[in-house]
Image (tube, rainbow, N blue to C red; front, side):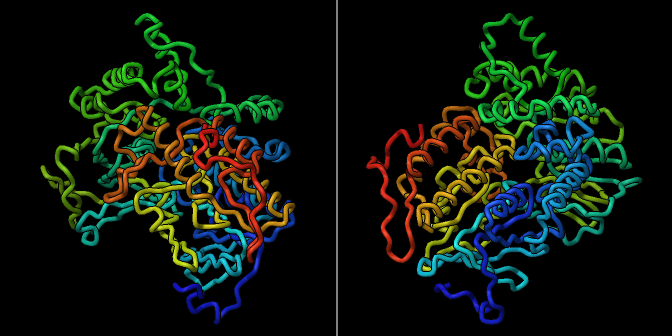
Length: 568
């Protein structure tokens, strides 16, 4: 592209708004709400036929949130919080989608959204200071600012197994599940993948199918959700202390409250004390911090981590009746607990005690191809009537890179990220002015409560837009050196922990050829918030603010662009 919009602009006059938004999930809806509060016009594009984002697409059996419902929701409005009562400790996908629709209805947000439309390209012209979006349906829209609310887990990944087109049965991907109910009664079903999605789906499918064959590459740690109905008085008590909760959550490591910081290391307790504490937390169930924040050092010290990992392996051997199956379900000693996404489950390990469930180790005997009648590994052929691919996502970068994002003078996101994603604060990319992302690589993102994180991101961007307008500027761009510092800081924080040790989607290891980079910021949501606030208070340190057309940038404090305080 040479700076001109590719043909269709001449066929249809572009829609002009103040801000363009890509995505109408939880982030997109909050962005639209905030823009309207400021009197700014917006146009959002959404690939689905309605709002919901991840909870619109992920309708697979057993789909459920793994953060407690009262915390995994919007918190910008006490009135909104009071208008909704959650029915379960961990809400199911249908309830979450009803909630999101409730929000869209309450604030009349759909009128700014174009549905069933994918953005294919985004072009920034420095002369006009406009982003131009084009879609797969021929839409063209322009605005000075563009916000990518595309989600961290929104581009499904399906391994390129040969022969899929030959399969005579039904095939599904958990992230592209049909809107109509799928009945597996009397069917031989195979499910590929035992990440958090597979762990949720397997018990539900097993209860229905004639036989379920689980194809596992790497065993995963999972802990019991202990889900239950929520009493009205629980919701009422939470609502009464909502303001206090909002303050507490901003000072928490994962934007989740209810788990006090550990005060001692495992070796400060006796073996009996450790076992009793672990047993109590296991019985209480709930969110991953229930076990991962039980002692100091679990995320950074192999010996401390092994205390919890060994306990979970012991639980697997205790629950699973067949010792050989239990051994295959136990993660290896060199896989730290928490280094992959830590799921919570309902009867996952107990499901392998069913007569109609078979576990296949495809690390030992990899899947060779899909056949007309099922699936072939290096050891056997499996006859199947249906195959479920629970193979996850091209996480955090896949959806952004699927859009042709570039500037008229030749800068492209694809080239900028050729060696892995680089951002400043996970919010902007140097060389792409006025383009923001929500929960992007380099932000706490998937290592935090996503809704609290997206509200923080959006609030920060909105305050920035207010500042630009008040100061008479219309362009902001991340400085290259500040971005390099931030990338180094994110990497150093991760490398000081056990998190990068696993071949997880956190590092892109599930997608062949993807550059291995630990993408989330693991310094803590609380620390991240403080850094963002300090950078804004210091005149948006690490950014260049200007008026397009040659105006000088807003004067800023003299500082070394590599100054440690930018990331400390």
